[in-house]
Length: 311
Figure 1 (cartoon, helix red, strand yellow):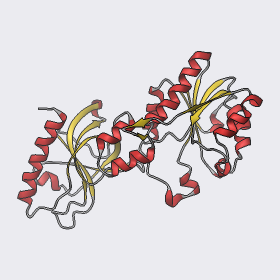
Figure 2 (spheres, helix red, strand yellow):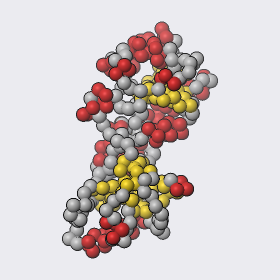
Figure 3 (cartoon, helix red, strand yellow):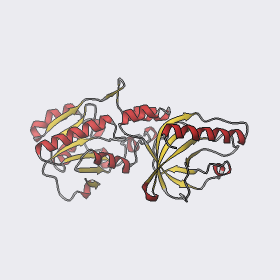
Figure 4 (cartoon, one colour):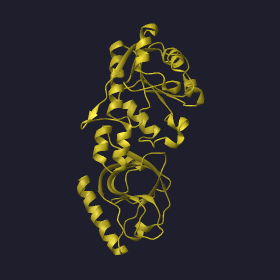
């Protein structure tokens, strides 16, 4: 897959492509249906499949106080899009100039003039251009004039409800990992950098890596989770337990995201880990003593071994 980060990085207009447009945060099953439709159309007509997206959610510029957290980091999103067979990924910088570009000009200058669209694929509710004035009805009205075909993809339903990024975020905030994965169609990975902590876990016999998210990703509900962790050292995927919350048993401990890796020895400071949440084991709780907390941690580790099916 060829990646262009910025419209100015495209050396020359494309001659003919099938274009899928969207924000695609999470690349959930609905997004996948749109992208797969574009890839199938492109293969049928012998031209590249191009995904056109943005470097940030438009709300970050237009309504910053309402901007939702992200499900995927840019690197994760790009990887998921590539796995769907896309040939070209164009990531436009969503700035004031692009936000103020009218929908007619967007189609003429970008979709047709730059991307060479011979087919356009989008979800039925996708809007574009200044004031979100561009929509499916507009594209259908101008497709003959510009010489492209429009393919509208219906919502994908999961467990009776349409898939959406909003729904995924809600599931994660509730700690419903299974439902989030069902809507995503792939695991949720939280990316974080390992930073020094208070070594509380080490004192209790469970040394943990303290994570600070590297991107503004949604963080699952507070609690204890069985997880898989991708470690840069050798690219190993290791089982473990993740704790998210205020650590109420230890006064003044403060909020943290901590990961305990089973039988791991090594220095992870300043490394970037990706944590795949598998199942929420329990809520965060306050215990009367460190001994009681330590005993519960042992039970959590045993339960995570069972969930992850590891010895």
